[in-house]
Length: 370
Image (cartoon, rainbow, N blue to C red; front, side, top):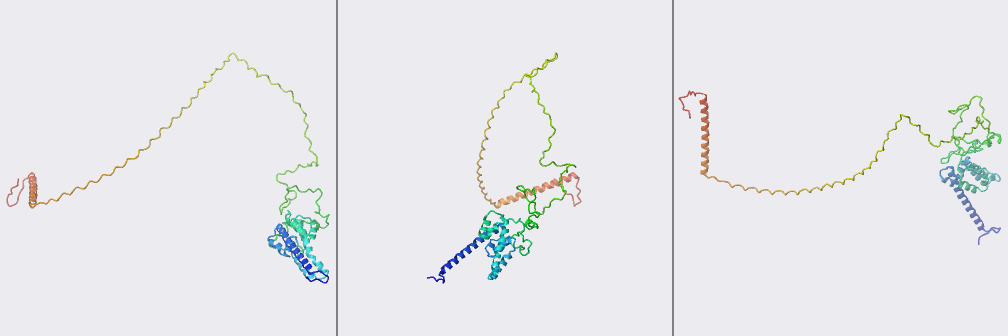
């Protein structure tokens, strides 16, 4: 049996009620983090983790809404410190909601949402975040400046890495609401006769300057003195009228070609030339058949086998001379040498006889050998 309070309410009721609100708060936090992550992607914020950090995610949201991100931190801190003060603490507890409402207004303008969408954020902020997160809108910073843009405390002056600066190039356009004398201030409404630019019109690039007064484009010729442009809607006068002359009757062509003139008495007819006889074309002779292919080359003759070498002759057996044979050979050689000496002496005597008598101064005369 669960304990009950004095008024009869059981404890499980409060436990269930607390758990229900815990689930609602956690679900609201998860959904809002997912929706903020999508909005941050559209704005070009780097790092999706920024959408999941409590308090810091709405500081980034305020920065995208042209508000100082420290306002959220101041509002949350003041609520924690002064919420126990009666009446004053309750009013201070609304400051975080007021800051996020102003930021949602500026973020909605950059996502092509009208100012009335802030009402939806006040009652159902989770629905406002979901619509802007998943619709087809694109981030556009070229909107009029915020009314607090000149306030150093409220306007955003911080530069955080990963979060793009929201001021457009060239500054914010003039906000007619902040001009003195609104709504009759210059620029509050377009002048009379204003026409919207045609489709496809592109605004001039940043830094564009209009041409000075009296500027004339190259090749432009000023109208002559005294020229007055025709009033609007008036058509130029028509040219001089020309009387219409109907065409005459059509000329009938002759029935045939005119007859040639008669030839004179001295006219001689040109000689007639007979057309050359058509020569019968001679059909081309049949092409000669190609010559017989050359005979196949004869195979080379088989090489003759080398002749067998002749066997060497048998050596003659040595002859053995006897002593008698040797003596006979020596005698023959001595006779030969003696004959050679005699022949030489005879030739010398003959040469001397031819030259003259030989005078011998020796011991006596010597007989010459015949």
